[in-house]
Image (cartoon, rainbow, N blue to C red):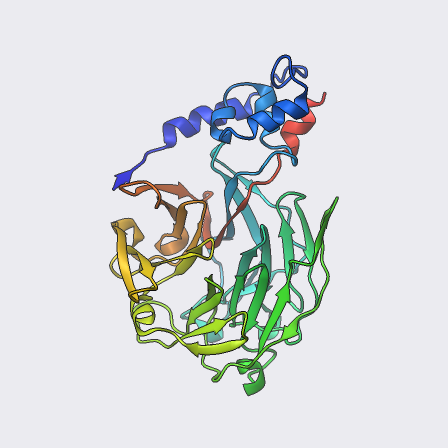
Length: 389
């Protein structure tokens, strides 16, 4: 295991990114038209292009250049002033190339309820998923403990625009939410009040038929009602449904407590019990890399494990004290990102390296991360506008 201190290289990159004396346009590669040069440079990792020249720096943030992956986080203030409190939702993106946080445009949503005196021992959840390169906000709580989202909010990083998806058949909170194969799923949960029908219901919205326009995705389609769950035990908390090999996997209790696990077969619209070994080792947040490799953190022991479906066993990847108390998790591009206990920092694990490498991305001062996703980077209008002068 290697723990990396990236502060020195990050400082150098930020200095280059923040300098203001941009030169006039120069060809990307002397002797080649820019569109041919871009094809050549797209085969080079953006980190190698970032510090070479202004034109290459601008290039890697243009909408036409293949986007690298960035970390997206839902942030809330660490200090609260009362038991009953609403918060505006604030998302930010951490650019691993420039090592800086950039805020997303605010979503068109009223402040949501995060704390309520009826639930002193918990924070009211905000549920979001990533699918097809988009961030989808699915469930939260509004005033009077009502569902805050009658339809999902979708953020497209390339256009940097928010859009509304179709209305849910049953708006809900404290549900199971996940994505698989380009579709979003919500299951169980509570609507304006508890009902058995809502607690067992399942809906799917397929984003694969949507088309991208100049201002982002043209969102259409409808939520499709699917086969009901056998029980309503997944309406007691916010549950992460993890897409893995054509299935949606979820457990009804977080942490190290005894729990029940179920697996939804996406193609056959069928629910089944989770394998014994899988549910036994599911002891904290979980995520799947490209829906092929399933990872989970044992939040009590601080151990990241990988699931072997053939033997129904979890194999240790790395043990690290920083992973104790893990709360949220995302996986993509060979990296597993884990929100530390208290949301103050995000541990990044390079699971491709041998031994695995770890480093910490600090959240912006005064904020904690309550959800994280790995998505394509946003473009940088500040660079593009300055470079065109």
